[in-house]
Image (cartoon, rainbow, N blue to C red):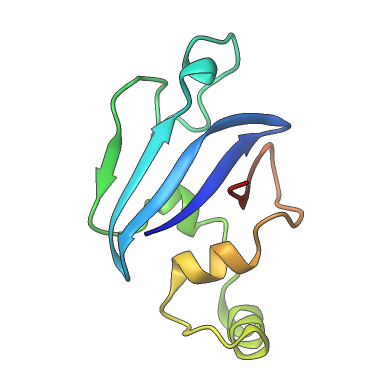
Length: 107
């Protein structure tokens, strides 16, 4: 299982996980975040205690990834399969993302 910490600015919002390579994704808000006054990370992820599940990487997270030539170049340099969106997101973890939401490697 691969996991990434999801942050809203500098606050841990939750954990994104891939159960098996290329399928079965979950996002779970952190309890402290659910109970805070901070906003949901997206309108598609209202704050709740229950886990979100999907057979594909959630569009909210896949939209954080580069496309086209940039994606191909990064995947080639990082030796990541272009179809491995979670792997690419993981490779970019800790880098500067557009907006308040970013991902980091779990510590």
